[in-house]
Length: 478
Ligand SMILES: Cc1cc2nc3c(=O)[nH]c(=O)nc-3n(C[C@H](O)[C@H](O)[C@H](O)COP(=O)(O)OP(=O)(O)OC[C@H]3O[C@@H](n4cnc5c(N)ncnc54)[C@H](O)[C@@H]3O)c2cc1C
Ligand code: FES
Ligand code: FES
Image (tube, rainbow, N blue to C red):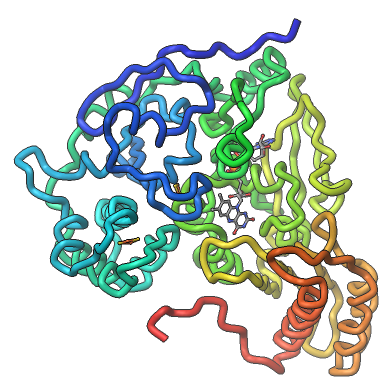
């Protein structure tokens, strides 16, 4: 008989200034839990991570004290939060009733009209203040990229953010002092193995359980399709899966490293990748979402598989016996949402050759909105050689077929030939025959084909030095 994960067992965490112990099912969200506890300041707008009305802070100990990050409470299981500090809008004011600078400046700058979105904006701004980022418009825009407002307009909210950052945080958030005492807690509602051998044991013991990392894909099955996920194994507490390391040849990234950490790590290493990460989801999504989840989810419109294909990256999967294998990302996808990952395996690490990161690469994402939107087409390109001869070409697309695709035939056409405008035109022409895009709500097949052709042309012209780099980030000042 297949065992189920222990359910409904005690979960201990800090909610605002109190330690809470709850019996919860694995797939209960933070949003449901806090609202049932009477904290109704946190709102439900979309229940899919898209609007930010449910934004809360989640604090964890770090080497710089407690580090707070924004999370979409509507898609984050409360069972994953053992030992952490959850701060809702009710918990922001100081014990003597003084508003947090994020709240105070939203009042001063008239940042609220109907008020439905306001608690979410306040929490996103409070996270910036607590992280002590510079009082910079771009920082504020990134910080609120996952929050939607229908009525106020963003200008007063951005002004409130800048003003709050200028004021800065004067007092610790209430309840922060409790974090150290609980930090070693693990939950039973969601299994939280601490290392790879415990993870292997958990998968062996509960083969019907779902692995969960950030939950930003998985939990939509609960909130949008009303599926139950009674058995969850959390990979984010597995120490080895949170490591980023390097040997002489490769960078090795743990599958459970969040996008926000990747942004920090790749700053100064790959500006095309960092710019792309700024377009992946929102700050809230990037605080939770992981490379491992993006790859395992198997979506043909995921942003990172084409990038990792262009970088010649490999996926290290490990089975419950601890046996590891490496698969090129380009060989990982078998069909629509179908990967080579078997039931007793997990993604442990992603290996990226340093040489790939150091060579010329460009990543272009086309989506309807600049922020917090899934790609209609995602193009990733890497070339080695000189402006008149490509010696290595890697071309990969998302959104153009049932899986992320590598276009070997176009790579071969370009490799070791004299690079000219004519050859670029031939490559662009040949591209059309190699892909089978769909028409759906995001884009028509014809639009996708045009966009993919423009992306390839642009990348080649930039490599040849015949085009200025494309602007990948647009300031809302414009
Ligand atoms: C509002 C919103 C915006 C988004 N925007 C983007 C976007 O711009 N671009 C984009 O590409 N995606 C986007 N996504 C999708 C999602 O955020 C990403 O795919 C993310 O990388 C998923 O990672 P996760 O850690 O949250 O995965 P989870 O949801 O935890 O897991 C996803 C799947 O992977 C499996 N899994 C997780 N970790 C492992 C592992 N280590 N080994 C084996 N299996 C594992 C899970 O069992 C599950 O099947 C968005 C999602 C939302 C809700
Ligand atoms: S309710 Fe919209 S992001 Fe959570
Ligand atoms: S104030 Fe009404 S949605 Fe923002």
